[in-house]
Length: 368
Length: 254
Image: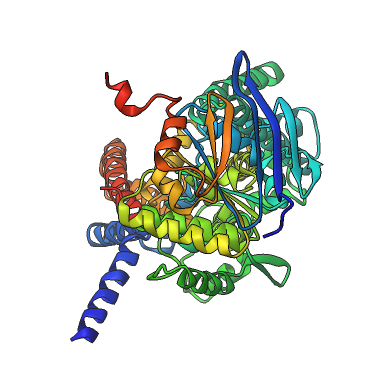
């Protein structure tokens, strides 16, 4: 009898533990989304190697910025300047390399340095003025976008700067962002007839998928790094604490300000990774790139189970949120649904996620 | 009980702009003693403990630890000299697990190859045995602080401070938001901590809670000390009278 009771309460406590996983909603969401598209879009080629690569790349893009936004949100802050930062970093790379003739590696490193310094500045202003980061980063959304267009116009009289591919040809750093890995494997698979090859055009004979793009490698690398940092290190403990209750954390000696500023820097780093991979992929930078990306990042994080109020969330959840994003966006394209409906779907999903998260928070904190 | 005080604060003044929050407060704290700091809202209790714990710096006055004058410039320095503060509602972070809370800021780490990781196994096992000692039954070390009762949270916070070597434990209204049963648990914990030789500074405006555990009572009023009395020298009525500024509650009703 008492054993039964104990088993029962163990079962209930296990059930509770599972229910309280921040990423549970995203896991269920991913399963549902895949199930749905597998049923309706199986015949469209969405799940062929080429099709998978398509939504895989889009998902990776969302992941790169969602990971940064995730750690920052858990640390209790927002960065609405991510999209503008993407445009800005891209233009910095293009202007310095194409217009000023810097070596591409130096352009890329400079873009990272400048972006991360701006990230630190946003963090510093937020901390020292005690204003909500929402407002401070909103200011930078405009400041950076304006600067980006200004820099592009005064240096080239255009808002799109091309020619990066040519100057990046023999660069050692550019392939880290724009290249592919395992190309040999894919070539071999094509020769074995396992993957299809192009039948016509300049690429005839080459495999339809020539390798794993670095963008995916970056996405995976960032997930592993951030998840590890958050859940396994003492710094991760400080991230949770800074967002959970900054005042309490400060009283106990956690360097809350440093943690928060570093998370703004990390978010800027992720935005610059995104910008650099895009510049290398397209061979150009455009001043309007990255518009609305900050919101897409935040939505991914929220779908991933993080609380908007900070202190709680999961990198894996955010990454799965980004995958839901990528699969649905591309999936609608595969099944030929009007793409504007994607935004309707997102809005509804966001609302559901926030309602669910609020409920979960009540369960954890024991609030009625 | 050693006769020389562990910590002395002499003639502490603190002004915020034109507002004088403290106008000369002095107390001396001995090891193994529970010193109650009583006072009505606005008497300057919070400002005073924030000076003790390094959150604020005094405008004027001296702080001695073991007879040596020191300055406490931030909470970290206070912790380094053995002063730990358990705040009424800022003690722990509800969304985080008991284990993560307990070790926050002093995480045990281990080296795995080139990286330093938190040693969760060690953290959790020490936590469980510490919780057992103070009578808190945890389902698992990963359960969130939010699932504990208010009294349990205070107890965890006190246990943590003592575990990390607090010599002087400042408790800010630990019982003000608690029910009778939980209050008695927290008071028992204070008793246990005191027996270990830790000096406890117990801030309260509840005279009966203070009388239950206090060895000495200092009453603050409008930023000044009205005096210090030993247990047995003063009774409920007199303390209540001092706190209310020499006006009995029954009198105020008129």
